[in-house]
Length: 312
Image (cartoon, rainbow, N blue to C red; front, side):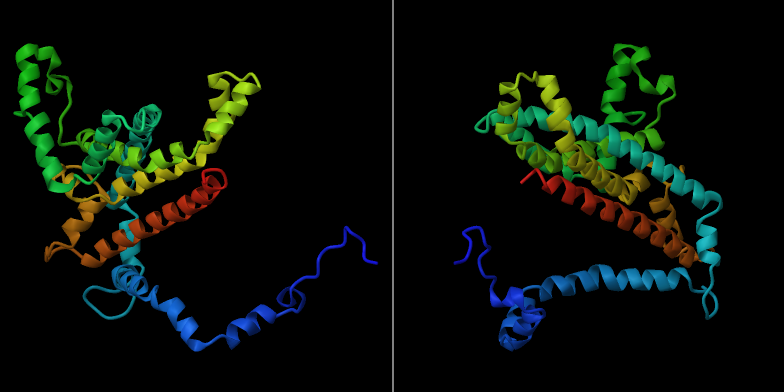
C-alpha cells in the first residue's frame, strides 16, 4: 500500500524528457500561426521604427562621409572636444531633471494616493498630470519665454514689485542649462506622478495593518516596509525621467539655440544640411544616445522585475 505522503504520479509530459517539445511540434500548424499572427503587427512596428533605423545609424556612424569604407574617426570625434562636453552637460542636466522632479513627483503622488478615490481634487490632479506630462517641445519653450523670459509676464511683475525679486538681477537667465532644467521640470514632475502612482497603489493595506498590530509607528512602517518595497519602482521611474530628458531635443533647441553644448542639439546642428559639417559624426553621437538609452532600459527592466515581486 502506498504511503499517504507519497507524491501523486506526475503527468506524462513531466516524466518523459523532451515530451513538451514533441507536443509543441506535433501541434497543428494553424495553432502556431495563430499565436504569432497577433504579434506580427507589433514586430513590424518594432522593425520599421526601431531595429532598421538603429542598424542604419550604426552603419553610418562607422562610415566615411566623402569616400567608401569604414572608419573609427566619427566615433573618436564624437567622444572628444566639444562633443564630449555636450555628453557631460547632457548627463548632468538629465540627472538633475530625474532626481529632483522624481522626489517632488513622488511627494505629489503620495498626496494623491492618500486622498479619497472619489475626491474631485484627486481626479483633477491625475488628469492635469496626464496633460502636463505630454506638453513639451517648442510650445513649452515659448510658454517659458513668455513667462520667465527677460520680458516675460512673471519677470516684469517681479521687477515691478521689487528689483531684488527679479531673477535676472541675480545672474539667472532662461537661456542656459538652468533654464532648460526648469522647463524640463514642467513635464518631468507630472510624468513621475503618473508612473509612480500605480506603485503606491500596489502597497497593500494589510501590510500597514500588520505593522500597526505589531506596534510599529508610521515612520517605522515606511522605514522597514514601504520604502524598501517602493525603492525598485522609484529608481525605475527616475530612470525613465533620465532617459526622457537625455534625449529631449525641441525644448532645449528652442531655449538655447546652441549657446550651451547639449548632445541632442549638436546632433540637430550636424544633420540640418550644413555643408561644412560631417553628418556621420551626428550619427555617431546618436549611436551614443542609443547605447545610453539601451543601458537605461535594461536596468529599468531589472528594477521592474524586482518591484513586481511585491507590487502585484
